[in-house]
Amino acid sequence: MSLFLRHLRPLANLGQAAPNAALQVQTIFRNVSNSTNSSEPKVKAAEANSRDGHSFSVSFTADSVPRWEHELGVIRTDWTREEVSQVYQTPFLDLVHKAAVVHRMYNDPQMVQRCTLLSIKTGGCPENCNYCSQSSHWSKETGMKAEKLMGLEEVYEAAIRAREAGSTRFCMGAAWRGPSQVGERQWDRVLDMVRKIRGLGMEVCTTLGMLTPEQAKELREAGLTAYNHNLDTSPEYYGKVTTTRKYSDRLETLQNVREAGISVCAGGIIGLGEGEQDRVGLIHQLATLPAHPESVPINRLVAVKGTPFQGNEPPSGLDLVRCIATARIVMPRTVVRLSAGRLNLSIADQALAFMAGANSIFDGDKLLTTANNNRNEDVEMFETLGLRSRPAFLPYASGNESSRKFDQPPEKLNKSETNAGCCVVDIKSACYSS
Image 1: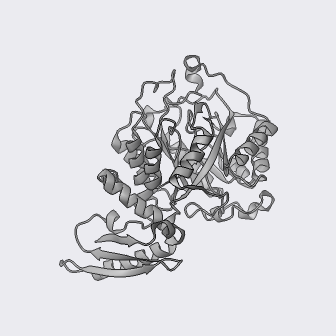
Image 2: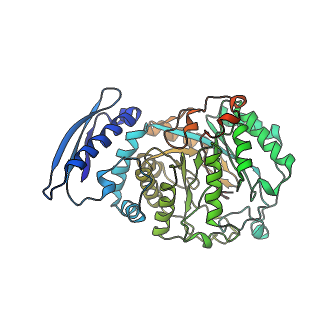
Image 3: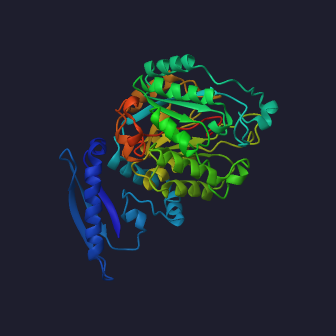
């Protein structure tokens, strides 16, 4: 069976009403699928209506087209690795087109969230992630000194500046293995940061390393909107990236976050020396989690002098777009975040990424320890491409049910609600994940 979206009228408006329309497409497909039992080709045409009255035509043809094509836009967590590889290997322009169609089923293609990332504790990390400048294993080579955890007011003022500059999500990263390695006073200070910044009307996220179930619950009760914990790469290649933790450790933290009621933000980095099938493996791992992550950040390596990966060549902009498009097709409702490595991408590169399904960027001159695009340049890009900023607390279609509860103030997030959850955030740059 194959599903062809004959035309979408108008494309820009369909994203607003697409969940309704996509549901009709899925229902039509199931009906046709059930009626196609003979070996002879069958064709079925139907009209689906979007929420605002616009319509689009769909037709189904029985043939040997792969399942993912005839179920384009259907929400699934049973993807096979072979299917994800087929998506990834699709000829580039066809891949971007299919991803753009799926993107408009569930998202407003003009809306892109602007996020700010601050390193609240820099350097001295005991992990040995080969891409990260903050690891203590090569601090002499990178010249990175371990700093103390920032003060509450200093972080709060940074969040105010980010909000005034147009960011709607504030992410705080700490170069820790996890909160268990630090004292209670430092942990309590981070919880206070979450509470106070949430009071600004911003989405709040953290990336603090591995969490226990109790730590995840405390973050949820403090009003956290998001938690980022990247998988980095495929399970098979992970040992080439770090040896101080296991892939299963990452998955366990994602489970703890999910069970605490915080939606999952997890993605990875390309340019670590991995092969194409490792990129496929990463996306497959994310697409087959119990629920698709609310956010999937796709990072392009920023090679830092002094790290083991200092000589790695950065992937091309087209490589990045291919990963974004694949993620969009297999996780239709997820926010795909165009994250680290934008600095030397052209506006055209980034426009292609937005067309393929990216709907978030990091804004501000610095991402943890590496340079980022100038805010004024991003404002100009938004104007040139006709993009507009995603407001804070706009409901997220993917992730846990609690992503619909963003508008609740922290004091109302009581113990009875801790199995619901919030939303998620993004990544690190020089140290892309804790």
